[in-house]
Each structure stands twice: as C-alpha cells, then as structure tokens.
Image 1 (tube, rainbow, N blue to C red):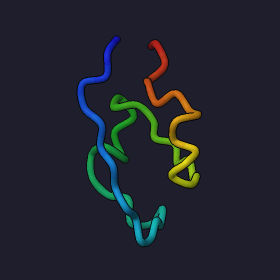
Image 2: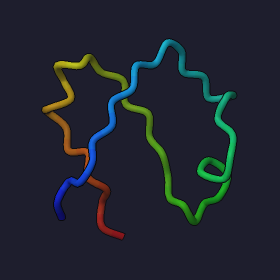
Image 3: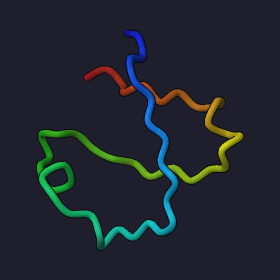
Image 4: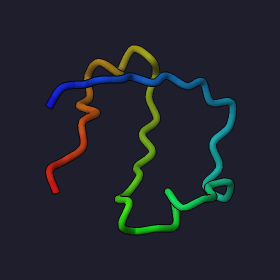
Length: 52
C-alpha cells in the first residue's frame, strides 16, 4: 500500500456534537478515531488503515 495523498488541517475547535453526515452515521463506512497530538508527533504514528 502506498500513500497517494496527505491532507493537513488546522482545527480551531473539535466538538463531537458537530459531527454530521453519512461518514459519521453509516457504520459500513468504518470508524473514526480522534487522536490529539502536536505537529511534531505526526511522524511517530502509522496513519494507514488496518486490514479489514
């Protein structure tokens, strides 16, 4: 598996109540996990999805 695209976002706020849309309510689309870290910690985690 190769990484084709990388996205970076700067979030001012993050509230679970603001999550809307099919990506949050449809369980067949998988799950989403919020991981909070500083920008220097990004290189230390594996962002690839786990095998189904």
